[in-house]
Image 1 (cartoon, rainbow, N blue to C red):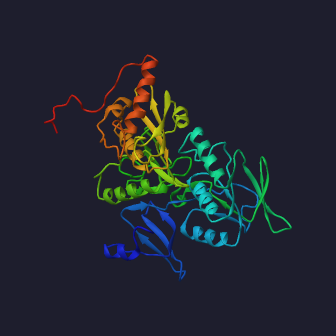
Image 2 (cartoon, rainbow, N blue to C red):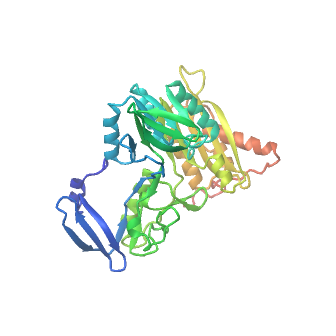
Image 3 (tube, rainbow, N blue to C red):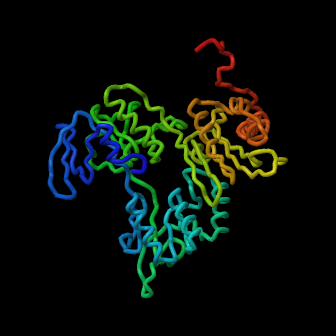
Length: 409
């Protein structure tokens, strides 16, 4: 809604029906049943090709009292506006779930002088994006900024007390707040096609390389579908805007035939937390081990440019790789300096199945305004190469075309 408008789409030649709700899809007869939300009128329309771009909804945990007035869900624009309005009249805010949305909300309300509790069922925050060590560091920063981070606490109920407070019962103590915001992840909004196309156990629609479903006349994209997750080579449910815009464009192209393949994703993402950049791509070490890789992680602790420059900042990089074939599996970056674009570079390396040996010596610019003679990406990869050499795995493996004739194209 922020990157286009009904007017722009109409001008481009699309027929746009806002405030119309599809209540039924009949894939066998290629019809959709639609309700006009203003008039209540119902009509049936037909299609030749259907693109399912229905997004996702908040995962609503089965918690007693989840429907309390003081408990709000956070996913879409309307919910965000309602939360913003409610927060102005409530000082103490509890946030349930410490992914990107929950953590960003915690920062936002800490900055506006609210008393913030961030409640997480695991012993780690941002667990899709960082390892335990980096999580602990971010928790320390949140705590220093006034956020009360409560880990290993699963919320079991919401109730009100005689003082008008919201009582939040957890598996490790009870807490009170004026308002609770639930940010516990997403589920695909795909009920309209259930039983008509193949889905995974989460209800995400299975797609092929052309974002086409098991029904050749139906395509799916964004939070409604799986992605091809390149680090593992397997389908995954990864609801990110980056995936949605790419799959959506490919769906629009491929309704006219199998024209352009979907390249897959590394789930590259980033956020800013109290003036620091966190960026992540591919697998964390825990996720890599759980996926069955002989994975290892090296950590770079240094600065992003030479210390003799007037200013610099600390930089932490975790680089995850497969010891068996030396391929890069993932990386995480954390610094006061803006290092998010480095995650994009590693994303390309994962996409191209590059190794730690490729990254260790790949050409990168040097100017002390920007980096050291070896860029920090080179340096963290050199750490990995050194680690493998010390364990007797001294067999560099290059995937870049260093031996190719430069005239070849």
